[in-house]
Amino acid sequence: MMQGFFLKEAVRSFRHHRGLATTAIISLTSALVLSGMFLLVAHNAGLALHTVGDRREMVVYLNDSVSPDQVEALSRQFESSYGIVSYVSKDQAWTEFSEEIEDPALLEAVEGNPLPASLRIKLKPELLTATAMEEAAKHIAEIPEVEDVVYGGEWVRRLDELTRNLQWAAIVAGVLIGLAVVFMMYNTIRLSVLARRLQVEIMSRLGATDGFIVTPFVFEAIFEAGVAAIAALALVFGIQQGISAQVVPVAFLPWTWALGFLAANLMLAWLAASLALNRVLRAIGA
Amino acid sequence: MITFEQVTKRYGERLALDSVSWHMDEGECVVIHGSNGSGKTSILRLITHEVRPSSGSITVGTFRGGRLSRAQRALLRRTLGVVYEDFRLLPDRTVFENVALAVRIMGRVTNEEVVPRVLYALQEVGLQQKQTAFPSELAAGEKQRAAIARAIVNRPAVVLADEPTGALEKRTAADVLALLQKIHREGSALLIVTTNPEVAEKMNSRVLRLDDGRLIGDTGPNGAPAESA
Image (cartoon, rainbow over the protein chains, first blue to last red):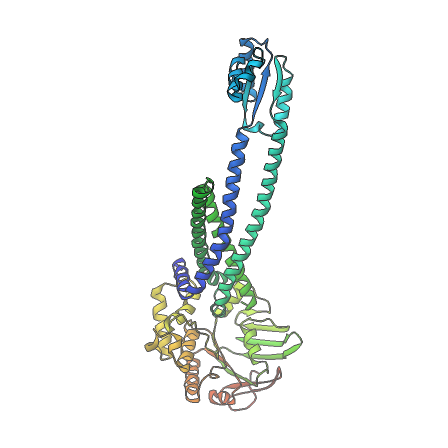
């Protein structure tokens, strides 16, 4: 019963202070577009790193003396320990090499087929770090049938370092943008509350509890933050579509991220409104 | 009903009340008279717990002591009806809605309970014809009547009136005082704070005189020292 009354109060307040409410929604939308863009960049950077990381593979070159049975046994062993294995015979390796060189004169200068057969391993996700790959390569190199192991150690180390740095940068930027949004939301809602200080004061003097005074403001703040968050998501979607069409294909936020973004903003609005009201109530000696 | 025991109130360096003691019984009518800055409004703010005393003790009904929680303060204020010089009506609500707000603040009440109580209070102050008007559409005297209706709608044990005629012309002021007298006769205790000596005279009740934060007089309706002083 009281919830209905509080909702009516929130609607009344919103309608009566339309200008202030619209300003609050526009301010919040601007701040939230900024954080939405950050999420979009973070999401696409994550996708790009994942795609690059997925391409990490290890090439195990085999001795020329290795029999087909030994190849079969090694494939099974690597499959169970390291990931998906594909066998490239000496002839296949030569064909691939020939296609890459595209110069018959150069190929004719080579006597016979000097290329070794190899096992290419597309590593399991848990082995996609420089340390894990180094460890795996060390074990594999100790096998007598193995001539050499190549996995681009330096490149993998750099990629890992880049991923770590990007993750830290994302956390720092995320916290800073989050704080800026909270600060802006708090101040925007505090301004709305201050504009209705008389109402808060009168209610307090009449004996209204904190909950009675605060609830309609919280409803209103949550509504404003919800509208702002949806508008911000729509704008970020528009920007993503524009970038995809004009510059480079980028993905929009997954729906779980979008829902999380909305829910986080509603929670922040609730928190900001409660804090702002608490300050005003203390200031007026409620 | 209301008791002040050796109450002192300081705002920083400024002494607003200096060791003031007085008592008011249930159903009594008291006028606190003094010039600006004599400490009258401090007394009202101490009663409603908008401020706390620097020293001394205040009892209002069953609420005793200088430090109440916010929830207790809300409960205390529901036992009081307060009328302000500047009316303090919400401009975005009609007269009916302003009075109804005081009823809703009391707690779980249905619309069926709110309507008759508000209409009765508006009838008491003679404003039933203006129930759909907004404060900006009312004359000053009507605004004060609406504020009085809001103060009495929950049938408080005591009505506090802070300079209730301060913003009114003479004839309207007399009507408002007559209305307050009527409310008092119907059983509510009444405490009026004023700078106007005519109010004290017209109310024909006990008068506490304040000067520079000190209580300098406590006289009954006939001018004799009050019994409960």
